[in-house]
Structures are given as structure tokens and as C-alpha cells.
Image (cartoon, rainbow over all chains, first blue to last red):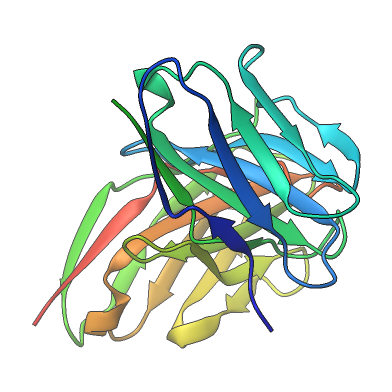
Length: 114
Length: 114
């Protein structure tokens, strides 16, 4: 039973390019969460999605960031026109329900903006 | 605003000695509390969780934590450290129904000396 799969593991982008991070939740999980971890910091919530719906995006920057979780396929976190400050580890987590079930985390995508 | 404070950014112990990682949270009527562990370049793994049942919670790998409402604390302990315990540990709190909007502490790096 595969866990939460994130790819790529490492992503290098130049300033101004776009970054697309993918997350496939565990089998049977329909709730996906994205978190960002800056160096020396804990994880910060970004967005919570169910299939085809954004439930809570209170942690998403207002510009350049977007997320989707289509009916088919992985969840995508998209960062347009990346800047150096976007360099971080981005973690995806999934759960079977939105309440009372622990999250299962992927190994993260480490984004480096040069 | 809800918050969680991990009192030590680094803790160093010798193998075979007890481990204590401290965590305090801001008071709330019904917090759920978790400890996650993150090994280098890995995702987060749930160690244990408290959701208003027994105040002493046993987790994996011999870890346990005690919920003390009077002290708003949820310290993580282990009687005897093992080299494989060296990792970063995050205390996490969430309030209300959604488990997705977790609030992470800044983490405590545990070093284990031979």
C-alpha cells in the first residue's frame, strides 16, 4: 500500500519560472493538504482540498500560488514566477476524512530557486 | 490566536538516557495534540496523538506524552534514547473539527550521543 507520493523530490527553478509540484494521496484518501516548511521553521498550512474543491486556502499567498485536486490525477501545487523566497520544502498530506483522522505525509518536494 | 511553543530548539542526550521534549500550547476548549517526527530528507511520521481520551498517550517506538490541562503542556518522553531516535520532533495542535489546519511548533532537534 503506497503512501503519499510526491514528485519531484527536488526541483530547481530560476527566478520567474513556474514550479509545479505533484501529490498523489494514499489510496482511498480524498482529502489533501499542502504545507510549506522554511529552513529552521515548522510546517505552515497552505491549503486543504477535496476532490475538485478547495475547502480552506487561508494559508495560501494571495498571488502566484494556486492548487487543484482534479477528479482524476494528482493534486498540483503551482507557483508562478518563482522568487528566491519560495525556496522551501513543500509537503503534501492526505487523510480519508477531513476530521479526526491523522494525516499521512509525503516525503516532500524541495524547491530551490536560483 | 492559537499557538504551540516548543521550548527547546535542540536537545542532546546520551544513548540509553531519558528523553524529554517540551511543548506548551495556547489554551482552548478542545485541542487535539500530536507529536510528529521528521528524519532527514523524509516526510513527517505520526508518533502519537491526544484527542480527549486518556491523558497519557502511548505512541510508537516507545514514546509517550502526557496531556496536562492545568499546565497547558504536552511533553514527549521516552525512558531510554536510541541512536535511531535522532531526528526533528514537532508538537502540533489543532482545534475544532478539521484536522487539516494543523498548527506546528518550530521543532526540536534531538541528537543522541553514543
